[in-house]
Length: 514
Image 1 (cartoon, rainbow, N blue to C red):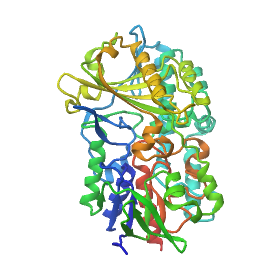
Image 2 (cartoon, rainbow, N blue to C red):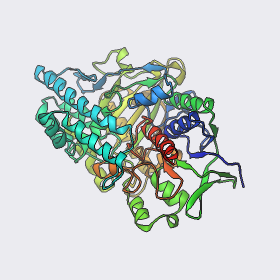
Image 3 (cartoon, helix red, strand yellow):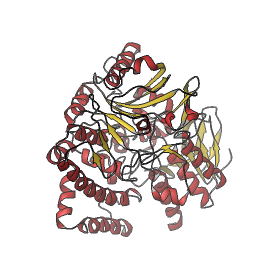
Image 4 (cartoon, rainbow, N blue to C red):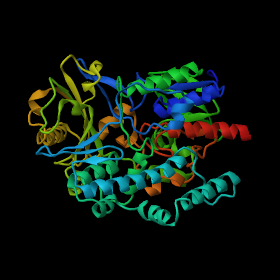
């Protein structure tokens, strides 16, 4: 029998750290076990070439919830903030978007963009309210759930008749039709399309992409920032807060199994055979790894195991890191523009065409790309005079036809470089080292089944009341003492901390009610 804790958190990703910090603040004796050497999960900073460091997976901070910041007194130091999105044009006539303004388009598009963002931010604010609480159960007679459902209906009605109808019309729509109706500029439509599909197995014409766009806005209205020291600095701040609150964090301690005895969890066993006991185990791992791997399907009802097995959670986004001997030349950009967010998505049709091959297990020959140069304002990330390029690239399906062998990886890497070269002709000659992380690599390095950073596709049938699946939408799994707190739980992925905070509140609330 090992040491007993009030709660054990499996995985020190940012949600696990948020959950453990809040439980520790409430006086619980909490143990966090992390398989990797660093805390942070997919929000880490590490070296990928000699002297060059990068945010390995998540590389922009735009969804950290105000409630999480306030309760944990977080104040990340930012090297770039309120970043402009620059939609690159091959001839240098770029379009520049901020959270509420756009430049480089017609006056009609400027006015349309203001109206569009005003409406979308209002809808995103409504969504954000419900991202920060446990979703109500459907078909329940529980008064708390009924009140929350009633609140949701009331909040939608408060939009007013016209806006309520518009919200209900848009929430399941594709972003392509909405943008095509509102705007003229191909670059503007391309950039907004990319924002709606980034990190998903969706194209602009796919249903639900208005919802995924709203989800992106539901942090700080889409304002993006780069933390000094990379995303790992945010995770380190969360870990510090958890430790000073009393939590114990142990790294390089991969959990082999969650122990189940007499129909309830009683602790965990690590890969090296060490056992830790608790009647409350909270998994920051994805739902499939938690249920099918750590717990074992035999310990849950067959129908529930089947729903978890069929959860759509195969990633489609790759990460490319380039070590550069200097900044590339991009026509139409001044030097200071390299502190901003650069996107390659020439129009909404291009984004859809980039998605098409992924439907058939093929990577995009002409991918869409989100690029940053984090070393431009943070000299700790590269040697003096050198730079790092960090890019999220789509589409790179987890189940690539033929597999991600050496040839397939090089073909895709070269496709990305060739695409960037259309805008930065000298990029290839500036590269001194590179690293490509496909979804298969993301799965291996960050222990995420399918390499999907949301731990499960973010669509209406895997959202809110049914995330990750029906029967597990309120963090508590159908196994006594087991909870989820990661991106696979409500509300989803992104460095927001909402799932971790909501899980901690659900656990503390249940104990209080008992």
